[in-house]
Image 1 (cartoon, rainbow, N blue to C red):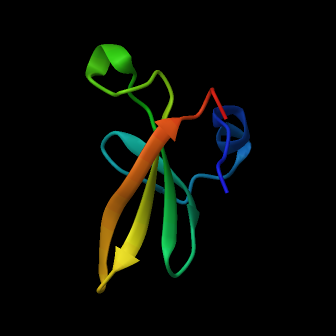
Image 2: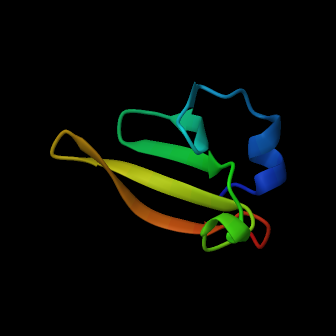
Length: 69
């Protein structure tokens, strides 16, 4: 499932990193909403990162533009 930026912004933040907010987490997937924009080096103005747990480690598996979903 792909979330839109506006949907993620209404969800409770589970955890903060130095540049993103964790908005969804289960045993295998995490969804992060970046607080940075293109001017900061992100690929999109509202980048959403998807992480998957692989062999016990969380790894970014993809990112997308949360405004174009």
